[in-house]
Every structure is written in structure tokens, then in C-alpha cells.
Length: 307
Ligand SMILES: C[S@@+](CC[C@H](N)C(=O)[O-])C[C@H]1O[C@@H](n2cnc3c(N)ncnc32)[C@H](O)[C@@H]1O
Image 1 (cartoon, rainbow, N blue to C red):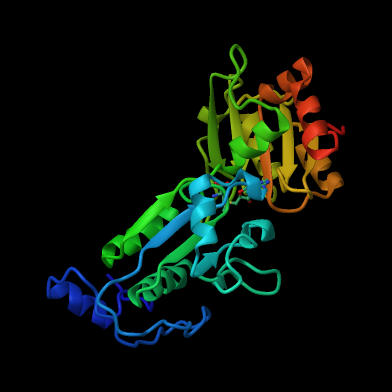
Image 2 (tube, rainbow, N blue to C red):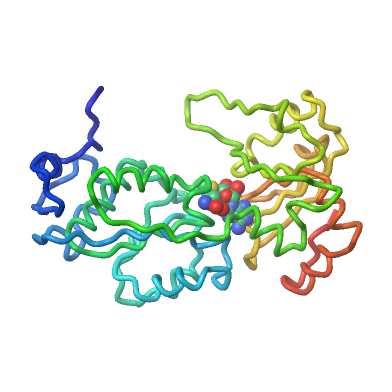
């Protein structure tokens, strides 16, 4: 197996080889340096590593956090956060906390996952508790599993705090049930995007099911392809689709369309990330029984189904 810059630093290997249960952090330098080189307090010798809390920040609105997440953020010493974590959520942290942004900013590439993994280990090894804040739920398209795997490998204590994922958060807030008796017997969450250089492929035949709701995360750029593949697999071109941008936030916008028209209508609506695509009859059912309109007007002061 090849050795990458993000593999274990030597001192970690030594500590593990010696069978120790605690970590002895000495100063070491990462070879990839886009994350901050040094953070206050980091690098001081300690025998007890801090704990890393992987905290779900929910879909956007700060009052959709769990009580546990809110408590941890309010006590945070150091926060490592992604792009989808809203300012309202960050504002809950003490002004004295250290905040490290590791998301994809408009002007630069995302911090590679292996650097984030190392940063978390590095901070915890210096004895600091770390709040690793992620949009939605850390384990739904959030790469939380990889971070936990890495922390476990280095013997860093960690805890996962669930968050409301975008699919259930955005839909319920709009009054659209993910499942509904007689309309949708289940819901599937899929990614509409895959790693660079890897062919995007989903099991279209199984996803083209008119009796379940399909929610596509990160699917806006591939919406035309997704629409074509689902139709080719037998899903009706008239299947209702709702695209939701920045759901649950004051910037929320929606675009109601159909599978056949999703390319044209989402382009005309000019939606910007983050966007969820909701495909299925629950969209129409919510309109038919009138719940979505009432909820969205009351909660957000605008109509969910603009045309
Ligand atoms: C990397 S995934 C992270 C998902 C997150 N862990 C969760 O559980 O919601 C990012 C994608 O989630 C979706 N998303 C997250 N928050 C959203 C929101 N408020 N409105 C619409 N889509 C959202 C979008 O599809 C976005 O591209």
C-alpha cells in the first residue's frame, strides 16, 4: 500500500506500537499545510487527548439544532466547520472560541479530507475538545464515517451528535411528507455527484419507483442526466419534482417542475447551492391536500410552489 502525506505521523505509530492507551503529543508538522499550521494551545505536551464531537448542525436554521448540539456549541473551545453551517449556528459559540473553516470557499478548493482528518487528530492530541460541525447529519453524505474511522485509528475519543438531515428538515418544514400512506411507501436518499474522475452511476432501475420518494443530494449539476436516466428506466416524465435551495433559511427558494422539465425549469429559476431534488408523488400530494402551502406561508412568508 502506498504511503500518503496524510498517513499516521511517526509519533502516533510509536505510541500505538508501544501499546499505550494515551497519546503523547510532541510537536510535528504536517506536510500538507492548507489547514492552519498551528493553533493556540496545539502542540503542548499532554497525556490525555481531548474528545472530538462530530455535531450535526441541521439544515440551516439555528433553531433546528438538537439541544445537545446547541449545548456543545455554546461551550466550544475550538470549532472546525464546513460551508453549510450557517452563521446563526456559529454565533452560538463563545466569542473566545477558535473557529477553523475547512469547507469549500468560492475562491479556493476544498480542504482535502485527509488534511481535515489530520487536523482533528492534531487538535485532540494537544488536549483540546473539538466541535466538528457539519451541515445536516454528520453521517449522511457528510464524510463523518471517514473522520470517525480516522479518529478511532489514532485512539482519539469521539462522539457523534445526530442532526436533522436536509431531506427531512427541508421537506417537513415545507409541509411535504417524505412518506405518505397510499402515495410513498418509502424514501431513498442518493448522491447526485461522485468523486472526480469516477463515472457517475446509480442503480436507475431500482430508483425509478413511482411508489417511493427519491431525494437527491448534490444533484443540481447532474439534474439533466438524472432526469434522462430515470425516464429511460421507466419513471413517468410527468413525475413531480421539487428543487429546494437553501431550505429552512431566509434565502430559501423552490422550483416546482416535472421530471421531463427539470433541466429547463431549474436553469430558468437560477437556483444556487445547496439544492435538493425531491422526486415523487408526495410533492403533488402535499399540494393536493394543501398542507405545504399553509406551512410554508406561515413559516417563511412566501409560497413554496411558485410555478
Ligand atoms: C455534502 S452534502 C451534506 C448533507 C448533510 N450532511 C445533511 O445531512 O443534510 C451537501 C448537500 O446537502 C444538501 N443540502 C444541505 N443543506 C441543504 C439546504 N438547507 N437546502 C437544500 N439542500 C441542502 C444539498 O444537496 C447539498 O449539496
